[in-house]
Length: 88
Image (cartoon, rainbow, N blue to C red; front, side, top):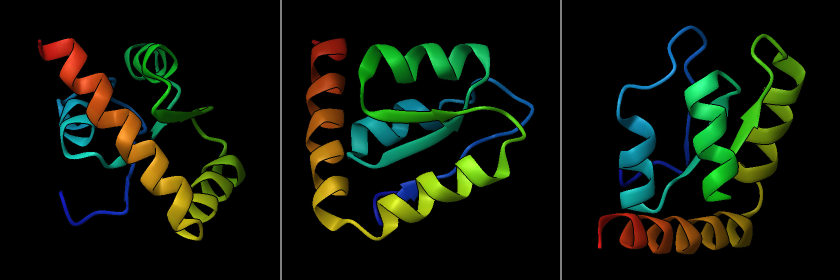
């Protein structure tokens, strides 16, 4: 996972631990806006939640972040800080 540029979403499950792993590793997560994932994405500010089934929004979010290294780095820094605060 540490080599990922973007963590991909689940479409029918709300949490498996991958979002927490992405925070710890500083990897941006683009998640389906399912209840648990959306709440954590909004609370953390370091994940992007898209409406489940909205393939265009998912595509735009992924391509925007893959194409913008500085944005990914910004999210990575925020993710690590968020993780450190949550585990302190």
